[in-house]
Image (cartoon, rainbow, N blue to C red; front, side, top):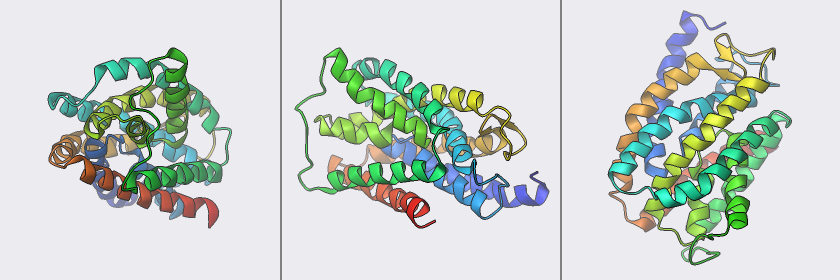
Length: 276
């Protein structure tokens, strides 16, 4: 049970995390989950959030996905005003991302927390290595137009993003840049992908988390609504700030910013997986 003392400590933490996550969501199109997940998990480790460690990672991922819904809406609106959302690309990939998110939300509960953190860290570090490369590797001169090709690329983005509680940008931005997509448009379009991942992911975690012991009061399945609301207030307000920063940077600096942020998060999650 969270008492007044817990909330006096937690609320400033939640709002601070929300500010950082919101700015990064707008800046990098990542939804903010890559910041929210490690912090929520850490709060369970130190005992400020009294969640059983056997379900702590699932709680962190699910609650993070819930915060991504308002964050993605705010970020996508701001990017749309800047003309940086490619609606053709969005319509082409969105159905497969939704399908993948539904699969990922169900699969995540079948894995131990260390598996989830390990997947998170390894995938992120591979992305970092390519984005910091002075001459990043590309797979094609443009995203493929075939139905099977789109399904093969977009569905795994939805699966792994939902499993890890992150918006689409963490995987879709580097994937799109591998396909020679301009980085500013990749970031903007990824902000909208985040909504397509979060909604089915939240539904999945809400359904499969019924009657699970060791979760906080005010939870629907694995999702803790008070925690998600406190973080979301700040992310919603701060995402447009990140969008303005993104559009003030040249593409090279935006790639470096994305890679540095991702490396920090990857190291944190790998330490949770292999050192714990």
